[in-house]
Image 1 (cartoon, helix red, strand yellow):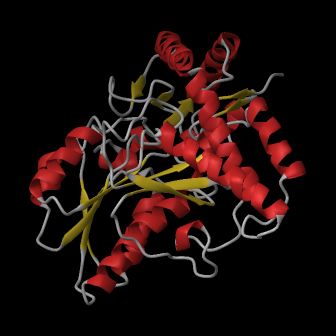
Image 2 (tube, rainbow, N blue to C red):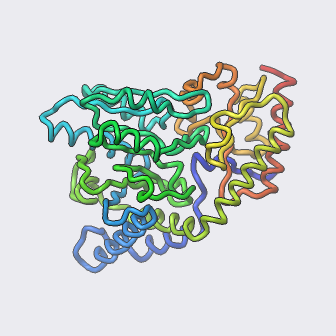
Image 3 (spheres, one colour):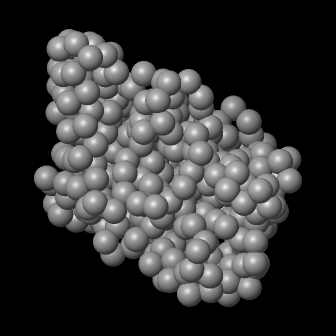
Length: 389
């Protein structure tokens, strides 16, 4: 029985080309990048070359810097907590106010919850039934002490894309000194993006979402933006992230983005076509299903659907037996069965939320994979509907 991987939003397999670069870094660049001798200098050069490439990929120019971290979650923590701490330090502990959406990844939401325990004011902006941010509510929530807005680029569960350029412009027009951070974990390395077009103050992303290693991430910080570190120790990463750099992980980020850049047009076209075919075949094969999130403005690789009369947990178990890997939402919730906060925010009823499955395709998905998966999903759904729990 084949194994068909349809959970690329949770993580991506390591690309063979990236693996070659990682092996080279592990074998030939083992020095501590902070050391002054030859082995350390060689590792440092490799890291700085990778940093320059990432800045170039993002069209950052000379207007900011890249700080490498251990994950997208750490990058998000550094951006949000770091901005709050810097503000309080520079403004004699004046209470700041920060804003996000109700459908952010838990890396953002739980960071906001932590800051609430530190006396920070927070606001959570809702969405409509299609997953679109209610921008007027965001603007009306801005206060005199609002210092930061954090809005994701695309939702990890539904794939709904937020119009960052429009949101950024509206926020800056309302109060130009507000910092704007975006969780771009589901955007960078999966779709075209340019900081020249959308001049964010801060943005976070993670290597394992674009066929690089797990355990490596990055944060872009616009020139002039002040943040304080949240990990203390040495002076690595411009003094913003203590700890010996993960040379192989950093190299994998740059190479992963490089592979994507070189084949971007073909890959995006292929993903769009395959995603459309998967969705069409799914709806043709099975009755009683609903698409969750925005029907058009979403990542083309992501299909989040609810199956009438079926519990997601039971269907995922059956799909695994058929060799299909999918999820019921964010992988960070795996092992803790709970209703998706994202789908709750859409206003969906409980049965629709409990029956929701996310399928996400990627670089190595084939048409044979899609055909097999559709057949297996249909078998699983019909089996569970015939024998409801």
